[in-house]
Length: 231
Image (cartoon, rainbow, N blue to C red):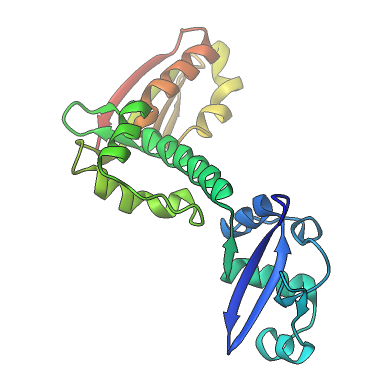
């Protein structure tokens, strides 16, 4: 078995179905992403035992999948079945998912005592201390709530939003208001008589500094930024 493809397996109604797939694209399918099925599928067969080269019968395919379209069946097997990763592939995918989770937590969480974002390194250490298991097959977002619950026993942590108010000088207001709107949920916009813009937004609390740095960069430090509340 080469690392260029792995077996995806689904057992249903007493039958076993296997297809050979690209592991990276198979993991994207598990995340709910669209992929090119022709690039996902290695070969044009559905097997009952891929290692032995034994193909599944057309009757069994129609019984379970209501079709004999190999591409459609392969997609269903990947979505609903198991991906037989090698130990090295599994380690790699867990590491990638872990990085995604750490980034998500850092962007969305704060220390409820200080109201400050939590450094990514501290989050990584908390994952280790809490002995959190990362599921490589589940999207990072769907694991977030459970993982935060576990590491909250190790460090003070809370998912929160920051309410910010930004006053943009007239020379920048017309150009960057759309960029600002993409950085959070706009709650209120007020155009002043002098052409300046006051925009109030709700952003993930962990992004406070990133938000301030970006606004300052867009306005060459001329914007007035205020963190109104965090909670």
